[in-house]
Image (cartoon, rainbow, N blue to C red; front, side, top):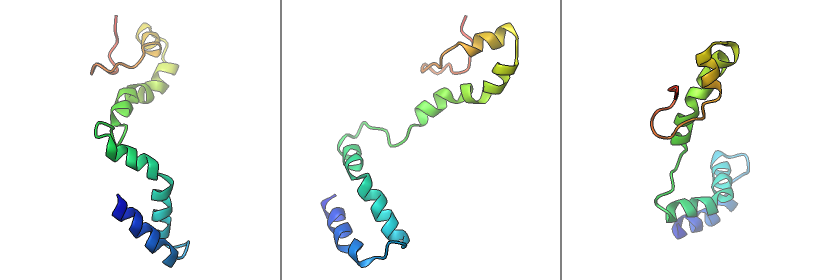
Length: 92
C-alpha cells in the first residue's frame, strides 16, 4: 500500500486532469480509506452479491405481485426476503 501511495503521489502531478489515468488516481484517492479497510479486514466482502441475490426475487416479481390479485400474490407481497437460501418461496 505504501508503494502504491508513493507511486500515486509521484505520478499524479505529471498527468493532465482529462487523462484516464488521472481520473483513475482520483477515484482511488477518494476511496483510499475504504480500500485500506478492505485489505486490512479479510472477512469484508468486495461486493454485495449476497444481498443482491437475496432481493432479486422481489425485484423480478414486483410487477406481477403488484398487478396480480391472488392469494399467493398477496402473500408474496408481504413475505420478507430470506437469507436461508429460500428466496422467493412462499412461507406458510
